[in-house]
Length: 261
View 1 (cartoon, rainbow, N blue to C red):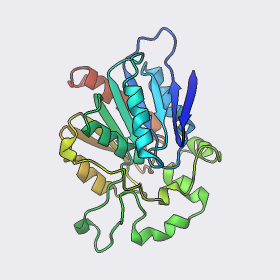
View 2 (view 1 turned 135 degrees about the vertical axis):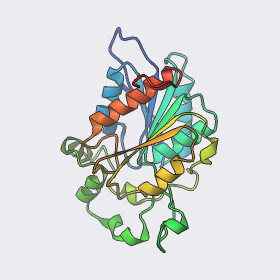
View 3 (view 1 turned 180 degrees about the vertical axis):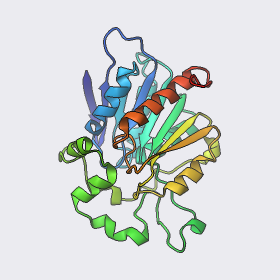
View 4 (view 1 turned 45 degrees about the vertical axis):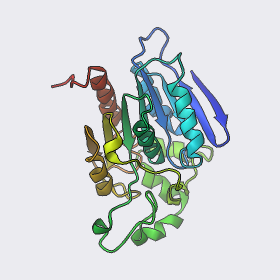
């Protein structure tokens, strides 16, 4: 069952587990720039099938404070099973890490396509003005047609058909820098396990800068999808990524000890 509630530009959508299933915890998905909750129907359904109720919160880039409040409402819902996990894509990953650093009651965080501004030494003379903005060398990409922007997000033809629905996506959103009120915390301040997922061919964010940032988070792991685009949760490798995320959740539930050895 899917139920949606909304406040301003922020929505919270519920995807429930099958009746009779023994819940394993709750996963809150925090959507990225320009994305409606329905962009995550397939991903959320797969996670819910493994007995994790899912809540999808949108609007992290449009209204970070309201989105944070919506996530906190999920985390404090006494009817939802614990432990709580956050899965954030793009801007949603930034908000998820910020909440974790602020000691929100979460057991682990997954981030996909995390936008991190490259360090000056890594830009070879070209700088990005904000995390998640289009680098100067690729400034022309900001005015690409909607179909090209969809291709930057995902190479999965099924998911591209979802993104072509006008109500599901603002195609130009990736060319908009993150708001100043949404920023990454100090990596050392994130004390819960973190799994970072990047597409190897992501040209929206600086994958190397993001990987370097995540390596400074205690206990973080980073994986890359072969030839993957920006939305690692909804790309051609979505089955493998979802499986890796479930493994991450289950390992945390196993007192942090890997189940597969």
